[in-house]
Length: 426
Image (cartoon, rainbow, N blue to C red; front, side, top):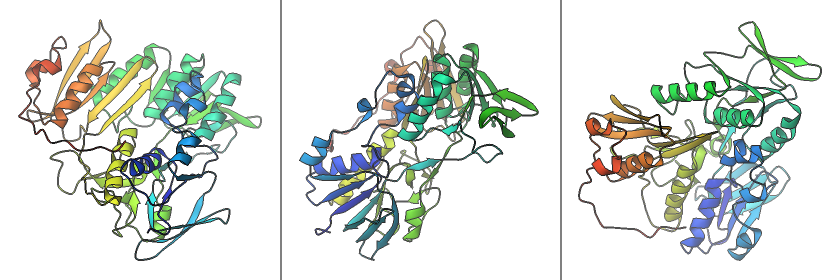
């Protein structure tokens, strides 16, 4: 390993964090960070919001300066797509790029993320039908927006709602299609879905639920509309946000176990016992305390990429720190800031806290008497209180939590805590 060090395939949030954390922990072997895009590593969440609206620049999204990579002896390589990996039983090998370049390694880390799921209908390949996953997608979308009036967004998840709110704010007529019965069905509960629907509808976004695009209609040599149940909705631009597919092809080619991502253990180590996989491409044991035995998850979040990369950095440097944390997520949708703490799957009770005068809305999810998750809209204090309670295994009595005038922090019952701390990498 000392000869070639670590090669990280994927200049993503997870890849950047892994390289940065390793240097912070004193790792001295060579690190090569390979990115297939011709951009320096950048933040993705702002692409559907601030960058699209023009409130931030490309440069402001860059994670680190070139001076940082140089001074920390991290070889950042752009515009190299790895198409084949030859790996030996000891974990060492060579990564082969499409350009013909080769990158030998003593150990391999996969931080290859996920790709946008494509829409499989007639007309989906027309000019003006776009997805929004990376910087090039965002640049094309931003370049087309000034010339369009009517936009159809297909997909009512986070990306769809964020982009729809941004485009509506920019003066476009926006119609959003969601083939499921409610918005953001994979991530939030029924009451939160209803709140999002009402908010965005009241502000002028037409939202069609249980609506599937039958085909995309051309107008000249570009897109002209989307047909749904015999109705053609005018569209100068169609934005598709129907989920992602984890990039497991390289992992599968070298014999790693994959199932909705690269299967890893609690230390981010893949099935060969050597290779690391982190971020959106990784399928890991559920890190939530008291999760059902054998339960596995794949998270698509900045927080997971950062925390799992830190765990992987510990493992590589010879220190085992099990990934056991509270998942959290966020989504900025126009005037709404949605924050989610924990995982609501398996809840049997909900408590709704709605302060209409202050525009705050939260739903707390309970299993028995124990709070397990919360959806919080424009309510950061509720989010922080639930997130802290989950981390400390504290109780928030559901009968008292029902009053939105009561601060959750004030009624949280915290057990006696350990004072043990650990030295976190940056």
